[in-house]
Image 1 (cartoon, rainbow, N blue to C red):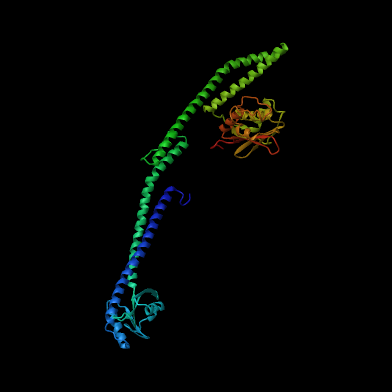
Image 2: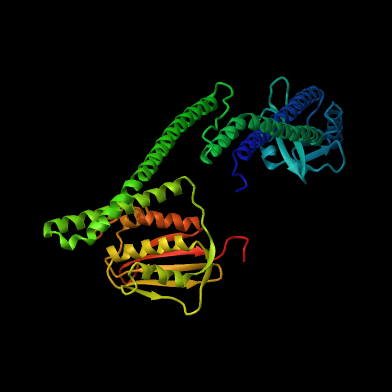
Length: 474
């Protein structure tokens, strides 16, 4: 079975996948929103503090400044609650910083250009050497005229604390994803058990019904679509059980009727056969018309007797009242005896092994099988008719072939059906139509089969296969 072959597995996988996707999506959104909120909050506070501090100190600042004045200005700004920021102040090429050796490369050319040409506070987030930074830059203007003074002030603040807070939040959310997925799997198991229980019950009932247990029924639970399906299945199973029961009763009645009629006909037919045999022997002494009528009555009486015998035989098969009387026999001798007794020895070619082929079979029933196959070939095929015997350690194979027109595909499908006569495919249609069915039943009684087909070189071939031994015996 494929990895996701069962509905239960697919349902659980779908639950877990949806839960995982939901958790990942929620984590990503939480990370994005939290990061923006934390960084934006810090940035807003720093902007406000930086703007106010620069504006307040600029009132007391004289232009042009000296390096010491710039240094003092940078120190004063950095002490204004800017979280240990690096403050860099510049005036027409002269710069000073609150911390010796401050890295001015963190102030990008874009930021410098925006400060020198603008009149408002500029903000930029950068990553330098793998560390996040917030860069604030603003031009200093004269309070009275709001004209640029040429003084530039920059503050560089590390955002590592904010990134750490965001990472901790992300880790917390991610760690909470695992319990969510486990909970989803548990819920999926419960849901699968609840949803699939009616499906399993319906499947069990279907299998039992297919196995012949016509009383199998599903147990509807609830009022959903699965319950409606179970009710529909039960109604269908009930209708099927009723139909099969009626058919079995009708079939049993038909079999009993055929068996009863056959047994009732046997006694008068026996008397008729005796009388017709006596009259047939005296037919030569009767007038021609009477002799012909007498021979016709005798022939038809014999056919009727064979039909009754076949019907009785079939009814015994249907009643499971036949058991093979197995003995170790010489199969080749049995075939020769079958042909000789019926006067077919000169009309049928045989291909039998020189050595004795012995098997544990019912001699009388093997005789019936061979007689029906050979008789069918003689009546409906064309000479020469050949009987071939082959044997292996496990089974014997008997082939009966003729050189007639062969079998139509439709005939092959029905040749072993009861009362089937291929009138359109054969030159004549004689007998009861039960001979091939009786031969097949006798073959099955021995655990064997008969197969009908056409030969490549023309003509029909019937192949009988029988086991040489009964299971458990040498």
